[in-house]
Length: 263
Image (cartoon, rainbow, N blue to C red):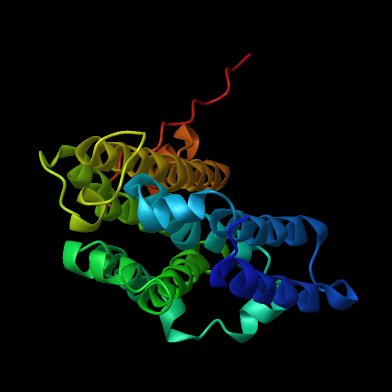
């Protein structure tokens, strides 16, 4: 066990919040299960062997912690928020799509700048905790419009696609740069495992693949929902298209009705 502030502080706070929300049956069982899984992920990422590996040896371990805080745990925690509570905070500015997505991207890219990344790792009892809290807060903001937003399925699909396209270059960049860019991990003592460059490449590929699964997968689900809604509304029905064409000015004339035969 490797207790950290996130494991013995943040995770219990999240658990208490989830328990308070569950009082009186305000959270359904599926939502409660999602929230509990989010808390468990945060706890596991910072109490297991992943914690010392991230803080002392491997970039891939640190990026995995970041992914848990910025993407996986937030969506699960947002899913746990009851609908009534979500309606009360619907007007919060940071939950608006055009604010949440740029904010999340800014947090993600800023903390991955080499000199900021290394500075945070060299201050594990202060700045590193700030980094982790901002990841979680920004992650909640970016997922809120998807889970609780009132936009159509098509708008949510476009939002998720934008998140995927704008975030994925970071992992690809880390995988393709021909040198290790984080001095902290270049000089980290390694008695086993990949070199600093291979470590960075593994981290980049893992991040890119994870974002493809999470964001592109969710985008696909909302796109299919959008297409199903449109088809159910008759937008893609051949008969509906023909009727709409006849209704438009200048559209093709309706087929003449033949007179009944005379006997």
